[in-house]
Structure formats: structure tokens, C-alpha cells
Image (cartoon, rainbow, N blue to C red):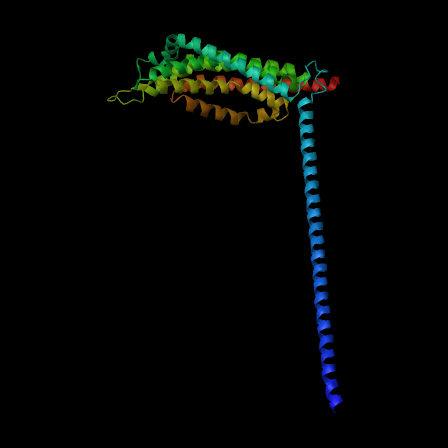
Length: 331
């Protein structure tokens, strides 16, 4: 009995020792697994960082290549010239050359108009007398209502005169700039059309100054009640006279506009003839608006020149169609 009792604690101690060994082994295993997991996570992090860095490097390379392509394209476009320029007898030019030419021609026009404006300011008394003559002949006087209006009126008169005198130079410089872009077979037409447009515009201005403007002033002043004084502001009259003259000058460009539309195939002589009655009605309405009078003679004197311009447009349109057919047959 005593031996059996002595053996029991030995067995218990062996069991305890084995349990401790198992716990220690489990702890070691958990430490090892933790280390393995930490190593695997660290390796995964490193691989992810490497992938991100590689992606960034690839994106940077693509961006650099795109920038290089854009710069090379821009350099090619800047240095690119029209290969057909020599065959047309023009100087080969790239985009930078065209911009330089535009700037130089614009400077020529601006400097010329500025110089004519300065000269016109010196002769502003003569200019104002010529502009105000249709109103002064009606027996009225123009009025200035503030201190600086006299100076601004002289400045406007000199600028308008400089612009009108420098108009041919403006058209010439514009034609010289766009000339390389116009086909050789169309250059003669464009040149003569520009010259004709200038003469027609000046013709409209002359008709307005010598006939329409004095007539309009006379008719409009008759609407003043007898018990009131008509005090006309000089600047407002000047603006009215200039805008009215420019509007009539643009109206006189109708044959040139019809000629261009016929050449590009938008308008035909048959179309103009078929719409003649509508055009005549619109011309008479326009004449009634710009000449506020019920006098048939006055309306006729305004409407008849516009009707003649419309008929001239039909003749020009027919001539251009016949000429185009002859060219097609000859080819």
C-alpha cells in the first residue's frame, strides 16, 4: 500500500512535466507561426510597394513619351509648309511665318490709319464743316452740351475720315494676306471683286451725302411742332450721319454679294428672276424706312437705284453662269 501511494505522486509529476512540455512546444509553434506570418506580410508589403513603384515609373515614362510626341508634333506643325506654294508661285511659309506676316500687315494698317487720323485732326474744322453742311443748309444749328464734346467730336471726325481714306489700303493688305490660300483660277475674280466693292461702297457714301442725308434731315425736321425749338446735339447728329452713310454703302455691295453667291453655286439667275417681285417690294419698304416721307418722287429716287443694282446683279449672275459653262465645255 505504501508503495502504491508513493508511485502516484511520481505519475502526477510526470504528467505535469509532459503538460508543461506540450505548452512550451505550443508556445514555440505559435511564435514560429507568428514570425512566418509577419515575414509573409512583410514580403507581401514589399512586393506591393515594388508593384506600385513599377506602375508609377511606367506612368511617368508614358507621360514623358506623350509630351515628347506633342512637342515633336508641334515642331512639325510649326515647320510644316504648303508643298503646293512653289507651284502657285508663292513663297512657302509655316504657321509662324503666317503669324508674322499678319502682324506686320496689321501694323501697317494701324499706323496708316493713325497717321491719317492725326492729319485729319489738324483739318478737323474742314471735316466738321463738310459733315455738318447738310444740316446747316436746312437753316438750323447744331449744339454742344458739355465741355469735352467739342474735342470728342473733332476726334471722331478725324478717325472716321482716316478710316474711310485708308479703306483701300486695308482691303489691299487683307487681299495680300489671304492671296496664298486662294486658288490661281479664283485670284483674278477676287481681285476685281475687291476693287469693285470699294468703288460701290464709295458710291453709296456719295449718294447718301449729296442726296439722302439732306433729304432725310429736311423731312425729319418738318415733324418738329411749331411751338417747340429743335436743339440737335452735334455728336448725335454725327453718329446718325456716319451710321446712315455706312448702311447705304453696304447696301450698294449687293451686286458683289450676288456675284460671289453665284460663283459658289448658292444663287442662280433663275432664282433671282423668280424672286424679283419680292425683292422689289422689300426695296420699296427699305426706301420708305430710310426716307420718312410720303412723297412718291422721293421714294422713287431712293428705290430706283436699288432696283437697278438688283437688275445689275441678275445680269452679272447670268454672265458668270455662261462663263462657267464655257470653261466646262472647253475642258
